[in-house]
View 1 (cartoon, one colour):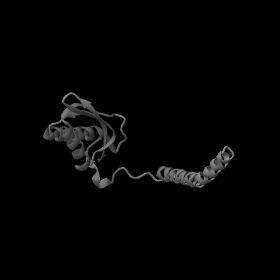
View 2 (cartoon, rainbow, N blue to C red; view 1 turned 180 degrees about the vertical axis):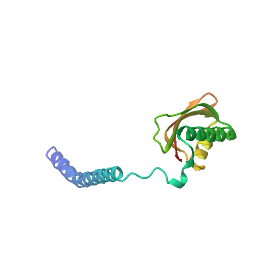
View 3 (cartoon, rainbow, N blue to C red; view 1 turned 30 degrees about the vertical axis):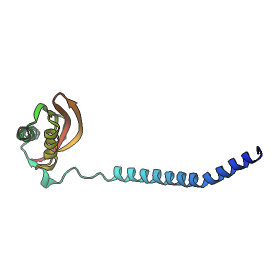
View 4 (spheres, rainbow, N blue to C red; view 1 turned 135 degrees about the vertical axis):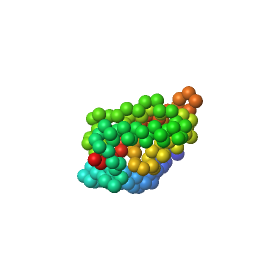
Length: 149
């Protein structure tokens, strides 16, 4: 009975070798595809926005003020409290960048964030975090919007 055990183990190993080789081949293919996608994404960055989507402003300060006004009105309309809203002075010329901290009920904050992204002019969240807060949730975000002079 003991002489059969090594033969059974060898047979089992042979049976498992084929699916293992196929899985390793699939993994190598997936890694190659991922690397190709990374190179393509780095070579041809997608445009941030089209000129028609940019909102009019006199300068970077005016663009930040107009964007802040829109954000405050959207928040007030949705019942969201703006805890902090500050302009980023290092923003490149065609972009208005603001740092936002807002809080409220989960439903109101999510609807507010959706309204920012879908409304006009478009506002994108370059980075954001939604955390639990007393009585609801808190949204910390870095907002970006294109403007034109």
